[in-house]
Length: 152
Image (cartoon, rainbow, N blue to C red; front, side):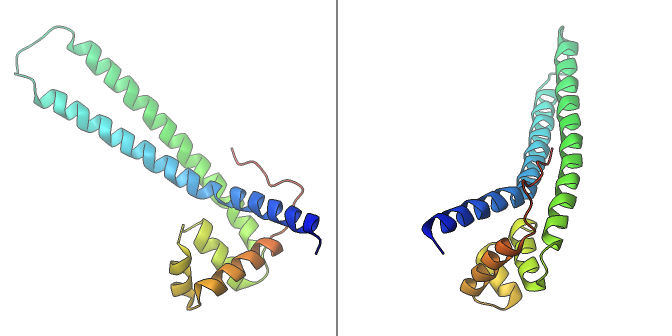
């Protein structure tokens, strides 16, 4: 294989990995949004608990801002969850295009489950080196498309 061919294959594999990583990116985005939502709820409880029970002016504005912020984050979270499902289906279909079941397993564990190499090796009862070799083969065997779809 010529140097130019190897470089092109390497770029193609990087593009495939970037595409496959989109699912875990969507999972992380949902976790961040859920944590942000929880943090805002905790902050609001702290504000409420520190009150002296006496009526004060301007409290309604704080509550309106809180409710609006909460609503925005919840709306973003629902949209992120819908994107996650679409991304999962798209990437799962791509993984299923790999004919070898062991190669499919490595890609699934790595890009859907987010497992480390050693975890995959342990689960599959292989060495890490063999798992990485299967990973390389799987990327090479992944159904080649002109351009992997951009998942919204």
